[in-house]
Length: 225
Image (cartoon, rainbow, N blue to C red; front, side, top):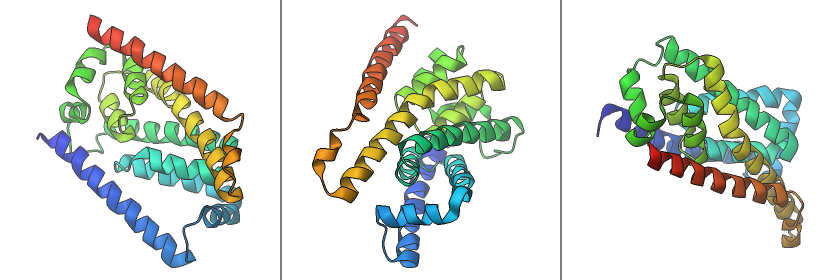
């Protein structure tokens, strides 16, 4: 196991510890970890809750905390539409900060070659010549956001190309997460499983079909390279 793989593994273990610690901290402060209590906490912050969430999301990605659980929290507490906007902004901000860190040499644990080892070598070698395709491919197959951002930042690409790939790759996933969280929140609070039959599931289904098609396209391209 090389150093890049070790960092990824340690980051995964650390993220689990952070999530468990967060659970006990919220439980100790508020007595419960219900959806209503989480939403009440954010509502009490007013609009300050949005930059606070973006900052927490960014720090989490920097330190290899899985982005999906944090995104689920955002979709629940902000609702589907505001949640989608906040998730998308958070993804772009986190990617931008990591890009600046790598280019400024602030992430000194790994050099650029070792950063490329955060993702499977086959992906990196085949798609490194097309950064946008590389980032979209990795996000389509749900690789960790931190690994994608760090390894892509090590490519010889510009900031615009890097952010475009992040936008295209994260948008379908963030929209699906936000809409699903909105449906789940309504079902859990109302206690009525029939509420799962909402129109919000239609775009989620379309996004799922789109990702399956995109995965097929990428696999075809993979075989040709």
